[in-house]
Image: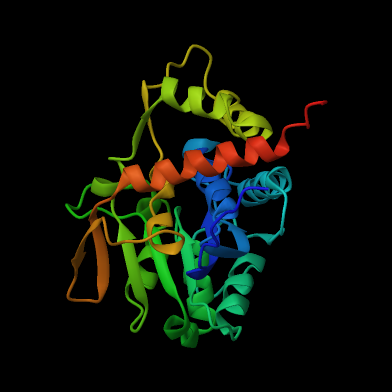
Length: 283
């Protein structure tokens, strides 16, 4: 048996996303689950933009997809929790997803907690509203917003949630804005080629792309950004080779992501998972 290296764990993570939307979130979730540098404590599902169909039931559909992926990856299985299908409303009781975030933040553990959100901030806003004290017990790593004020899907899907979260004092924030995450560009051919060579996990992920409910005759662009993978540079890897801007409000904004590090790691982990899942050859 060849020797290997033991990778130090950097953080606990709660991974939040609108899993029933763009499949790049599921690619990122698989990467989180396979990363030896972090521990996925919970997975939470947020509301779905009307761009992807009727919002009703979108969070539950996303939670079901995330739970299916957790099963495909195997190993330690974090719980998956659905959030609300409505935008942030301070008068509404916290959802199951928001409660899971609060519970993770309250738990005593030597590893720091990072809440990774690559979708609308609804669940995070509910959690912080329900218990503002958790702001000092977690870091938010958010794929969203724009450094130039451009329209941006994750912020604009629930503007009230974004305004609430970004206004919470004492909350450490790492942000990957539109201008950064759109540079994580893969061609569709490249994506298919890599996933096709990654066993059952790759096949499951590729089906999420080809089975998107697109209109008949709709033609996708040749490039598919995998921007939801950005936060792995801080949770499981190292931020040192990327470029950051420290904002006056305490936000640390990534202005240039080391994509070679993030996606090289992703491909290696996916291929390693495929090798382990392959049936043993007879001698």
